[in-house]
Amino acid sequence: MEESILEKSTSLNTLLSSTREAQGLSLEQASKRLNLSLEQLGKLEKDGLEPEKLSAFERGYVRNYAHLLGLEKSLIDHYFADCHHKYSALHSVKAYGCSTHKPLLGRSIIKWLFVLTLVGLVFVLMFPVFSD
Image (cartoon, rainbow, N blue to C red; front, side, top):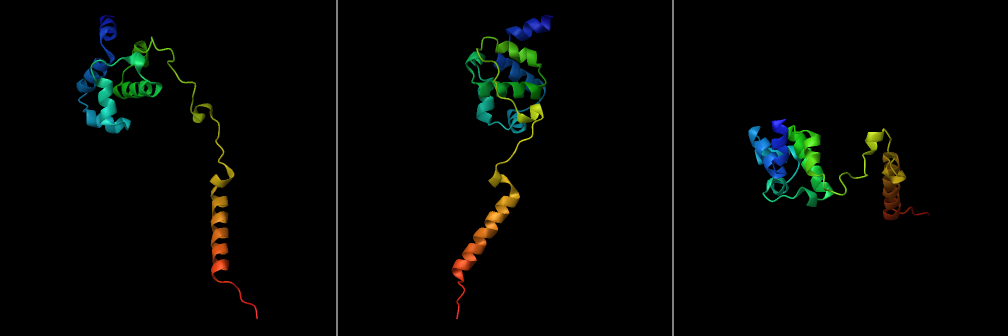
């Protein structure tokens, strides 16, 4: 219970940086594992970070960072309680088990037929058949 009260009074940037440091993880290591720039990661740990002013993408970065650090989702969501739009309506197609269909030119057989047709056309134009 006391730990819960302590965590709620801790600022988000302090929670992230202290948890990372407690795990012996450097900013560079976390940056590589999250595929985020050092600048972006540093912004999340910077003093004066205001969670309610973060964009949807930045809130996603915070959630991914928290997941990497092993922090509970409910703890991070507490910092976004004042945000009007906590979650995006966008979801991965894979989350619903739907298959994606490529457009006609996205299929490899169509691409190869198109390329072969172009090569044939170039060959015919470069080496015209002469009739007697």
